[in-house]
Length: 102
Image 1 (cartoon, one colour):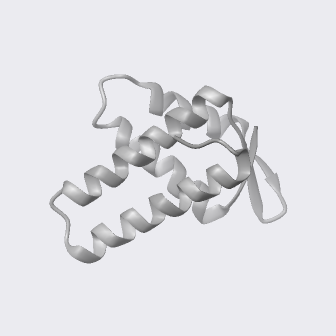
Image 2 (cartoon, rainbow, N blue to C red):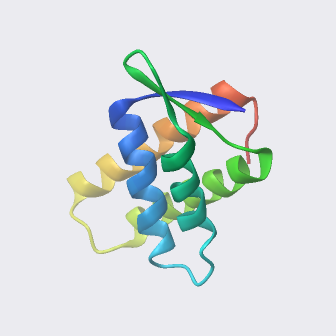
Image 3 (cartoon, one colour):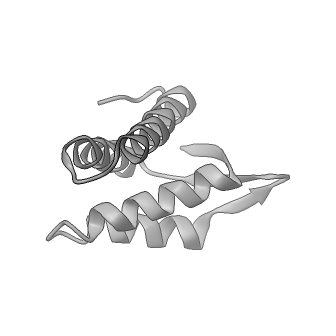
């Protein structure tokens, strides 16, 4: 499935996956991020990201972990809000583009 992302959404997705991967023992998130970097294509100002169904579910899991860590981590209120908002927006984009949700 292909997901069209603006450049800042694309950057957030990669950064979020690497952040969650740094706290995980399984390199699944790192592998997804590397695959995205290798296979993403330009579509005008957007980036098209092709993900398999299992990768989409893993990405949604990573986003939920990112939200949990933001809400329970040692961050100031503004940082918490920004992290949760960005991750929630990305969940919405993925769900809208793919029709899949967790």
